[in-house]
Amino acid sequence: MFEAKEKINKSKILEALENQDVSIYFDDPLDSDMVLNMGPQHPATHGVLRLLIRLDGETIIGVVPDIGYLHRGYEKLAENMTYHEYIPHTDRLDYLSPLANNVAYCLAVEKLAGIEVPRRAQFIRVIASEMARIMSHLVAIGSTAMDVGALTVLLWAFREREKLQDIQDVFTGVRFTTSYARIGGLAQDMSDEAINMLKDFLEQFPEKLNEIEKLLLKNRIFIQRSEGIGVISKETAIAMGLTGPNLRASGVAHDIRRDEPYLVYNELDFDIPIYEEGDALARFYVRIDEMKESVKIIHQAIEKLPKGPINAANPKRVLPNKERIYSKMEELIYDFMLINFGINPPVGEVYHAVENSKGELGFYISSMGQGSPWRLKIHSPSFINIQALPILLKGHLVSDVVAIIGSIDPVMGEADK
Amino acid sequence: MENIKELLIRKLKENFNSDIEAIVDFQNTLTILIKKQCLIEVCKFLKNDPDLHFDMCKDVIGVDYYRPEFRYEVVYNLYSLKNNYRFLLKIKLSEEDMHVPTVVNIWPGANWPEREVYDFFGIIFDGHPDLRRIYMPEEFEYFPLRKEFPLMGIPGSLELPRK
Image (cartoon, rainbow over all chains, first blue to last red; front, side, top):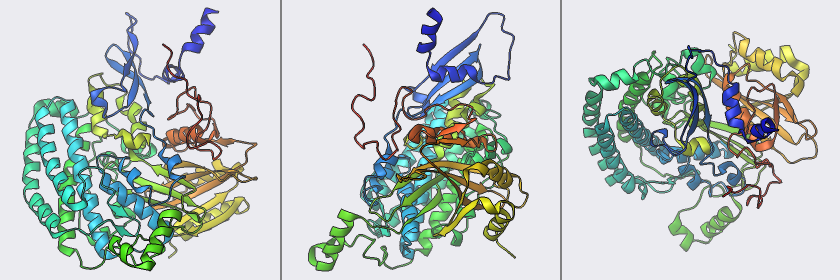
């Protein structure tokens, strides 16, 4: 009777932890096996990630991550709104790089509807995506360093990020949730002021990045806490489906910007940083190097930025210019139809992926020819990266948990959708 | 020189001609619909064939088409690092038989995506090592991405914490 009651009270997640195949056994004379609950409210879990950790003394022998605390049902919402209406929701996926998410979503819808975006808009989208990558990686390295005890780096990284956010303010009109890309183009053109601000930023940024690097790479505490910690081999990383910097730190040269080129990335010259070690330090290096590459890409994109329109000439699919809506009959009709009934892309299903700061962000859209998607699936990199956490954590100490979570850089807004 | 897409279609046709139901190439996204019975054989073939070598299962996607026959579809997003090629492998599923064999043994990364499909659609993956809900709470009884589930949710479906 008592046993039965206990069984009901035991949650499924705890059962999953106990059922885990545990291959590391230690001498356990004092019966030191225990379960530690970490999160969802914990400063080092980068949001609302909960981990159930089974410990032997201080050594981790099993981990079950529990996610879903920030689940907002974005896939269900998408089925009930038009394609344009969904753009602001993409900001809230990976909230550290909203610009890149807008671009990713719009690219998927454009692929579905067969819209060709003008070249100027494509270059501006590249600039926006790379800005987002720098912004996101700055948070990643800053918070990783803070998690292992180097507090200054966080402040220095956020100082640089703040400058970028000021640029974003001029560039898109908002500092945080940008909603900048539109289906078939952009919300507004990039002004000369924004370009000049960005140029000034790029001028001084590599030096500041060097300072951050110097602060950490000769810091014995930081190196010791991240070198050889959370190692994932090349084969395991591929098998677990890791993407982005986490995969490239394990020695796999997979970058969607290079492998399935989108926008104008095939016209730009940049390298893909790869490290073989697969540990937390390698993931940190990859992010630092990627920021340097992003600086290179933005320089080239600004240099090559052509003149011309920023929206595709496709009135049935692309929102018209606001000024013309108020003065021209045709545009008013198109605007009314687009807002009320949506863009009605052809029947079919597409998948489009981009290389976001965390990894491969993809949108699968199945359309039935209606104004709203029949099914929209977000392939979020953080979700897949968190999946590998049990492998990364096994055999390490409790104090390494924060370093490893920081090094895979999950964003729960994206993982929980 | 045939490209990877032609090679993939040729090889699949050579080995599983009777099991392929449709091949659609829409806006550069190749979708291949196969019969459910041969899913595991096809997946093993795709992974182990030295020329194709689809070594990553990036995602498992459930779709509810809300039609009388074969209501659900499960889509596998497969990627080959060797060829830098991606395509979607699909199976159809009827409402009476909501069971699909798991591909976790072939691609371990399909673990959480399959749990997600189970959580949202109630599709059961036979042989999955840890088939629990992933986003919704354990005691939640409905499958929210099915089309009959209302957008506003069902009142009382989630128990509030006891005092």
